[in-house]
Each structure stands twice: as structure tokens, then as C-alpha cells.
Length: 95
Image (cartoon, rainbow, N blue to C red; front, side, top):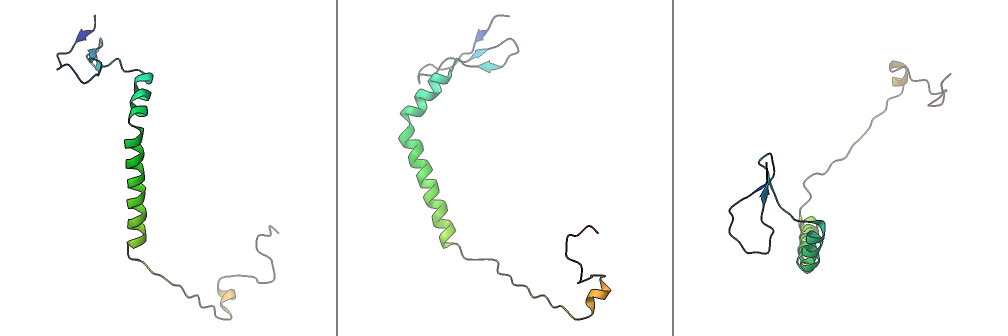
């Protein structure tokens, strides 16, 4: 099967999509075309990136703390016998 052109409105500077043999729409956009668009729009991309980072920093700095926790461990004498902990042998020994 030969590729068939899809009827689309022209203009915009984009390549016309083409149907491949399986009916999927493809276009003739190359890596150099993508790099050209990125180079043209680098200030817009950079401005959006900086605005997003600034907003994230602002929200992180002004958001109230929701979670606060503390802990207390009580150790009673004689409880090492209950859990079979031998205080004379160092931790991590294999003998």
C-alpha cells in the first residue's frame, strides 16, 4: 500500500501527516525541526520553567506545617531478660 495523504487544513508551517501502511498517521517532522522550534521558543520555555520554580518555592515557604511528632522511649531495668538481650556481647557479632 502506498501512503495516503490526510485532508487537513494547510498552513502553520507543519508537515502534512501521512498514513503509513497500518493506518497510523505519521508526519515528516525531523529532529532538526524539533531543535529549531526549541531554539526559537527557548525564552518562553525558560520563562515557564523559572515561573514554575518560583511558584514552587513560594508555596513551599508559605505553607503551614501540618505534621509535628515527637517520641519517648522508656527502658526499664530487667526488661533485657524478657527480650533475651545480652548486654555483654557486642551487636553484630556472629559468634
